[in-house]
Length: 409
Image 1 (spheres, rainbow, N blue to C red):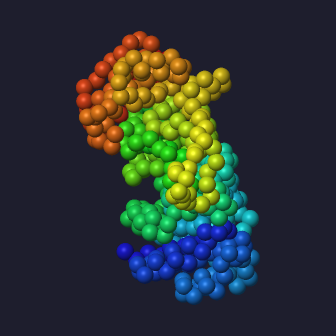
Image 2 (tube, one colour; image 1 turned 90 degrees about the vertical axis):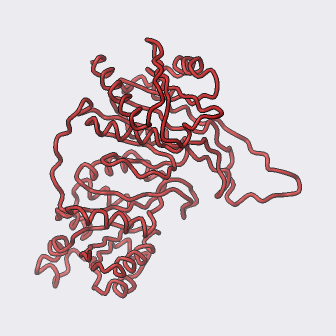
């Protein structure tokens, strides 16, 4: 399946990974032509890129020899897929706004070929509302994204923003190449949640102790991801804010990967406003006040003393919003005893509209399992459901939420 790929390299420390990406793509038989932004040249040299790609490197929008034949148009038309790796916040912003201030941005504006972005930037830049808006615009326009991943960054911070690894980028690229890489106009969604925006949190949060250890709750993310898939199938536009999970992203869903509870709150705030907010994530209650920059070692004095600080309450924060509160705010309660009583207490304490409670005590296979048995708790009472596959639980819950939303309008 040899294809012609146009690789755009923007500025960032992750530009060095682009060299490996070129090598691996060519090993798989693909032709690679490369455009480098001016900032990319501060991290890797055009000579290295040309040697690996076997092609001249392009960077000047106003090259007299190339532009006599409208080279920037030819570059975009000849490609079966465009990959932007690393995709900086600056280039993502230019593409979202339709700017054409340099060759890279002009190519992205002048193409109808599918574009795969591999973002790379500081965690705060990735979570900034402006970046998230720009990413949402590009997704709506038909662009695809791989990553960013979580981890330690060159700036010393930890969280989402690391460029996806080369095998991940190649897998995403070849999956797109199996489809039509020409952008199709979006079609109107249908279903009981058509025209609605649903924001869902899923999976655990990881609260770092040091670069290799963390505090977390047990969660596979299966129920939250199933809810996102069910909401999308019901016609909704879905934003899934997910902690670290070993699950593929649901098709057609905008996924924002996060690490900590604070990151999850920030990403949720960015994703709002929404018609429905579902807090299905197993958020850690505490984080360590002072995270070590190096791995903590065992010492003769015994284990280290960790000072824990309470994490933000995401469900209560959204439920208590004075302006822009979603019409429906749904929480989950994983309990080991007095499941219904604790769920009812949580409903009142958090100020949400509904609690979905389940028993995760001894003998339960809910955590990480394929099925779930829930109690739907609201001011109207308690409805206890039989044990069902998590996808069926999600489908029935979404039908219930759609009905409640319709009744509230």
